[in-house]
Image (cartoon, rainbow, N blue to C red; front, side, top):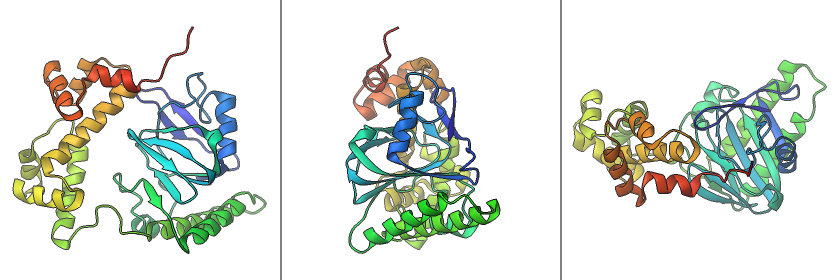
Length: 305
């Protein structure tokens, strides 16, 4: 179960139900659809505009389809989820469900602290830039299905001591995620000479992007030259350090514009722009559209009163 906290971008908090008090919930897509129909949105979203609305969960969301096609938006990218793909939404990302009647499948929700530390490291659970869509083929397909079915079965078995049930579910989720993430090298795998540099740079950008957009700032803070940061960013993300910073700023601007009610000037100030015209120019140059136009394109339609 989840609970909505009203903010510029609605944040969905994980609130365990009696059956999912262990920190994980496994449900068919049909169950999620039923909840959305009953409440107007995902469980805990009590307003009439909740269905199909973009929100930011504070938990992990793993989705796979058995039959049909389900479109899912994650940070303004639309992903097609089929029987050969798995989709992983991480805490803090903005996501929106498509038409849930178009597919059958399973949804796994779990809290960031549910897994053991070793698994957290192995599957890079804390990586906010982790891969979103996973393409599955060959013998990995039935292996993942079996892992999910076992997890779902044990989740539905409640007649056992809570600590035992929690331990079983934790280990079965670990098996599922380990199988999923071993399929390809994780996004951002770098040559040894760039790995630590980029990881430090990325973390610093996440902390400071609302107040610093120049590479020189991060070079001074981290003790590297701007050229070193650019090389590390190119090796990891395929773009230079400046472009990496700008993409993070633009992503947050899009989130706030599309899913919040703050004026453009207030959003610009939040992102470190002292002048609204500079913010408008910055975003227009990098997205090809003004903040107002972008907002009107993505804002959900308001129902008639």
